[in-house]
Amino acid sequence: MTDIDIDTSQVRLVRFLYADHGGIIRGKAAGSDQLVQRMASGIGHTVAMMAMSMLDHLQPVEGMGPVGEVRIVPDPATFVALPYAPGAGAMLADLVLPDGTPWDACPRTFLKRAVAELAAEGYGIRAAFEPEFTVGHRESSPAGPAIPDRLIPLEDSLCYSSTGFHRAHDFTMELVGAMEAQGLTVEHYYPELGHGQHEMSIRHADAVRAADNHVLYRETVRGVAFRHGLWASLAPKPIPDQAGNGCHLHVSLTMADGNSAFTDPSDNYGLSQVGYHFIGGVLAHLPALVALTCGSVNSYRRLAPQMWSSAYTCYGMDNREAAVRICSPLRGDPASSVNLELKPSDSSGNPYLALGALIHAGLDGIRGKIDPGEALNIDPALLSDAERTRLGAHRLPASLSAALDALVVDDVLMNALGPLRSAAYLAVKRSEAAHFAQSTDPYYECFHHFTKL
Ligand code: GLU
Ligand code: MG
Image (cartoon, rainbow, N blue to C red):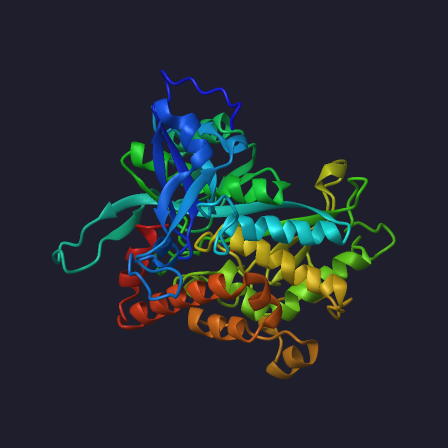
């Protein structure tokens, strides 16, 4: 059951949260008087919700129809009181069959199993999500309700500029306090390139904790903004002509003794053979992997050459245009040891599926000793097509549909997802791609993404 200590005079409702295939965070809340029972039993939930798109369009998926139940079962270790929602708390939850066994479509279970497979090979993993987001006001169009609302940025400061710090200060300080109150350690904060765009990074953790933290993070950015009368969005491109919001994924593997499995001081870039093989696997599966790490139609508006989001299958040392960046450690800070950063990643996907799939891709590279080739230490967009082809730097899928096409033929990732989850994911994502293909107005797509993500 539970040994968590909840002050029920302060917390009257506890949200049991999960992330769905549309990348939406959903859940149900338990009243605190029944909390202990509901934590043990879970809250009943229709299986159909994992076939729901980010537009609340239910997709026909066998096994996810109107008949059938799962339970939303929270992990007590993740309990937090929500600083931006007085009286409410939250826990991250698994989706479990009524008999208590894990459901084949539970995203959190997918990540736990990926971590277990990695452990069977002798490795642990530390991960961090590095999100950017845009803060602004939601404004309706003077042209009338048929025209989608827009996100008008809070400020138009320059990249990393002190003016940006000033303009967003009250919101930012409340955000820092809310993160820290939930046990998320703020590493860095700065105003970013886009108008209204900010970045706050959170300290790494083990993989499941890092994904849980990212769900809490998304909730907190949006929740604090709402209390200021603002809208904040982690959508990849909430405003068509502004810099996109990435959520680069940082990972490093550890050995049984807790030391880094990625560090080799004798290597040019300080990276071990295991690290190179991990990169080899990631690059080999990248066209399919982005269907999960860049999981929305809106993702592909961001993922373009020379946007610092990466656009080609290549890796490099501290190269911010490479899909995988070997990050140099900070001098005098051994805890910041060499790690790998996946740039084609944003906050519109399901964080458990994204990180779990990244692990499977890297693991395939380790098992198959996949050679990633030479590091590319220039912007691949500056090379000719012939040079890129020679170096194996291929353009990443340019749309969600193209990424899904790559996923379908990637046996490693399809097997890892399993039949139920992959069928549901593909159905949901294909429906989103088809829906947004009907409109040529970029603001229509941006509207649906900034209001929901
Ligand atoms: N905004 C960029 C992206 O979409 C990242 C910029 C940076 O390097 O921080 O990934
Ligand atoms: Mg950034």
